[in-house]
Length: 92
Image (cartoon, rainbow, N blue to C red; front, side, top):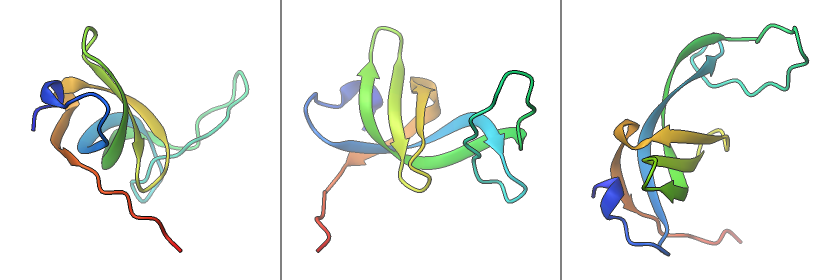
């Protein structure tokens, strides 16, 4: 399904790509840096699967949470594909 056609109020996920800093194994690095500190990674493209949290249809942006790293990203609609519903399963 297209990101623009997702009904409001339902849980959806998608595949996405984002430009971010990656470690030497190609995984995103989340760092809290002080002014003047260099980032402990190299710029690159991360492709992952994320849970859609917020859509801004006017600016064509989506905020999502990566299921592997739990990092949050804001991604352009054009960098999102393969949208599908999410089935939440409670772990015991």
